Image (cartoon, rainbow over the protein chains, first blue to last red):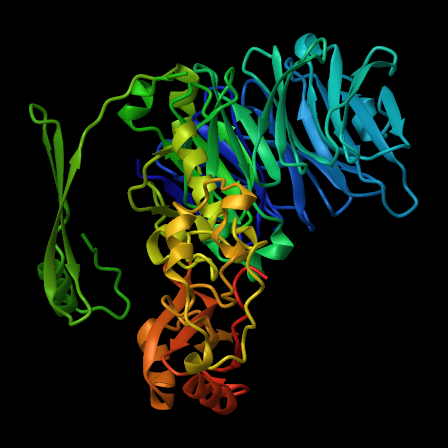
Amino acid sequence: MKPLLLHGHERSITQIKYNREGDLLFSSAKDQQPNVWFSLNGERLGSFNGHTGAVWCIDVDWETSKFMSGAADNSWRLWDCQTGKQLEILETKSAVRTCGFSFSGNLVFYSNDQAMNQTCELSIYDLRDSNQIQFNKPFLRIPMPESKITSAIWGPYDEFIVTGHDDGTISQWNIADGAIINTEKAHTKPINDLQSSKDSSLLISASKDLTAKLYDLSSLDLLKTYKTDRPVNSASISPCKPHVVLGGGQEARDVTTTSTRVGKFDAKFYHLVFEEEFGRVKGHFGPINSVAFHPDGSGYSSGGEDGYVRVHQFDDSYEDITFEC
Amino acid sequence: MPTYDGIGKSWADEVEQEGGLPTPLIHVDEDRKLKTLTEFKINEDGKKVKVIKTYRIDIQKMPKTVAKRKTWKKFGEASNDPPGPNPANTIISEDIYMVLVHNKENQLQTEESEDPFGKLKDKQKMVSCRICKGDHWTTKCPYKDSIAAPSMDGAPEGTAPAIGDDKAKQAGPPGKYVAPGRRGGVDSKTTVGERMGGRDESATIRVTNLSEDTTESDLQELFRPFGHIHRIFLAKDKVTGQSKGYAFINYSKREDAAKAIANLSGYGYDHLILNVEWAKPSGN
């Protein structure tokens, strides 16, 4: 395969996300403009200009009409996908770490960091009620005093939010009353990424403790564990094959002291069920910070500490990979 | 087609421009699904060049919403980009392949890399018992209890007592259990074992703090002046073939080795300070 290198960021990539159809790929980095690209040919559609700090999290709604981003400039912003115009802005008390659209696109959440005497909070807004954004009055605000949220996604049917924490726990929060539904001590080190399968039945968590784990998204039962030899920064489940891809690598601060050979910057493909690695794809010269499967499973993309997004379209031989056990 | 705007242009310029750059031609070949675009450009030398670009027309079916998005106007940083990928932002990288990993192979590989001595043992016979010359460490020698530890390091070659041949005969293949009573060392009074027959470990020096780029021939060059070198062993990384930073050098004579240590210990070689010392007898 001939990957497309998207070089629209000057700093390390923090998150990449496809829209529902997979024709657009959104990317954010520690520089100030999230970008959006056509995934087919790598053409840049535009950038969302306005943030004044590192952008930590992005999400796009179901119809690809709205896009949101949260950044270290203590703001959460909502954008129009077609024009790149800023629709809404919320000032927060600390950096926004995670954000997400519900499936309907009506509800949004963001979480802010535990910093500057500010506890980590999960705030949930209903976009249909314009007062909530305008006066910054979320209909639900859940404080997280124990450990800050490092990653979060919506559960199925917009009923709960799954959060991954700095201390390695995964929790489910009911958005009707803010109560905790379930909590699980999943990892021994911070959780870097949570992603669900396309049908919202499975959850994969990527952690600094060198493992990625597969959970049932509703019951939070541990199903599988993928062991690696590197901190895992991101993990994604293939929408059509029993495959998962893990991206990671040595920590950014150790990179300069090691060569790329030992840096373990390749993306690792595991069989979903057998927990066995079957393939690797090289390319990045820094750790991979975010991976995402194309929604039709024909390729995947990875964004790295090196500032590049690499869009891969699988070869035909990928279809022929059979698993012997 | 430039039109006359009346300011600062003469008819001569117009003619010049008209002759300069004909309008681009687009030819679409429906059958072969090819689109040919013929453009004319002035290159850096001021010469007119004809540029023919051929595109393959590839029709893809996609949802209406996706097709609609294709027509969206570019915005933000990309607002000034021409249609199509901007080469400044989008680079098509070279062909790469998914490297298929079979777990069994993988395990073998890690085992190998975890045991570099195992490899050396096969290839270089680096591990050799000083007592029975077998393929194991001296401490693990089955005869070590029966034979007094050889007085190492100092003994010059000539002074070592001769070895009883009978012992070697009784020894059998190394590694096999031999009952204490059958071990040859009981009556034989030899102390130094068979090491005289094998490599003289006493004339071996260890060189550490070598740079990664060092090769055997470099070492040869560096250590040759002090005497005849019997053998050079440079530890290398299995994968990259780069030096691991240490080497053993076997001189034929212990005096030569001593000379080499005296001269080269602390010698600045390739931005590093060499550390040259007697090799510790393997095994203890």
